[in-house]
Each structure stands twice: as structure tokens, then as C-alpha cells.
Length: 232
Image: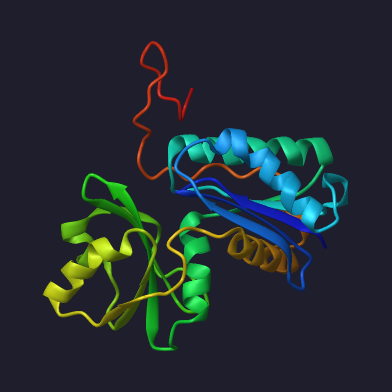
């Protein structure tokens, strides 16, 4: 099983080629713009490092949000195009799951992993996970001042770009928490591990329909005439 996973949804560009036993090649670039121009060259680079080509792939995985509107569209459009051209299954993984995966692996059995992304406007995208990555809450968009009320009791392990924003509120509330040493941006290796686990559990044919983007907040951008780009 050769899988190509990538992420363009948040503040980085990441890609990885995996074979079910480990990572064959991977790349990670902090990036807030220019995903569209850089994505395909990066995918070709990691495939070349693994001595593979697009023809060798058995499956694809991509992040579906939450994230920036432009970044999400770039990754999903590329993934859908490749899946269609190569008749490949495509697994969608949320950015919250992806950033929580390595943090959960290092969390204690009594800790709840809280994945958070800075959504600006004093808001965060947030979701709670057990160390097994089982979701304990749905993905949420909440204000920083109310975020504490959405958290489960007990010890917390925070990860993501929103983690340092929530930390002062947790201190003020007397909550026990720590900041995970995991990267605050999703990594393609995490996307790939989650996707491979789902393929093993559900089979390739469960992922023949392309995933939809996960929009929690409506895009700010408007097309000419005032149309919403999420529905246009």
C-alpha cells in the first residue's frame, strides 16, 4: 500500500509518502501563501525521494479543514484531480485530527488532547480527543473567553497554533494543562497514519467518493456579484 498524503489547509505545506510500515519520504514547509504554486513541485519531490511516481500510488489523503479558504481549496482541488486521473481512493482527514495525532501519542492516559487553531477575531477552532484519537467533542469555532466552558474536566494537553492563546484562560480558571511539544501545524505523516488506519478498517472502496471541505466559519471572500465562494 503506497499512500501520498498532503496538507495545505493551515500555515504550512506538508507532504509524505508512506507504505503502511513507515514514512518513505516527507517534507514540511511553514507557508502562509503560495500553496498553489508550490504544492505539485513538492509532491513530485517527495515521490522522487521515495523512488516512486504518481503511477505507483494506491491511495491519497488530504486535509479537509478547518483552515484558510484558499489553502483548503488548493489541497482539495489537487487531491480530487489526482484521484480522478489515477482512479485512486481519497481519504479526508481534518486538520484538528492531524495536529492531535502526534500529541495524543505522547499524552498520558489521564490526559485529554485539545487541538486548537487560531481562527483570528479572538476565536479558535477547537476539538477534544482521547489519547486514542477518538473525538470527545465535535469541531467547534468558539471565542477564547468561552472556550474553557467547552473543555472536558481533568488534565489537558494542548496542541496547535491556538494553544498559547488559550493557556492564560486556563491558568485563570485553575485548570491543569500542558503544552504539547508536537508541531502546531498539521504534518502529512500524521494525515497519512490516520488515513492508513481508516483504509485498514474500512477498505479502499469506502473512499471512492471525494471528501467535502469542513467549513466551520463561512469564508470572508466573496466572488463578483457578492456570491459566497463556498457555495458558488
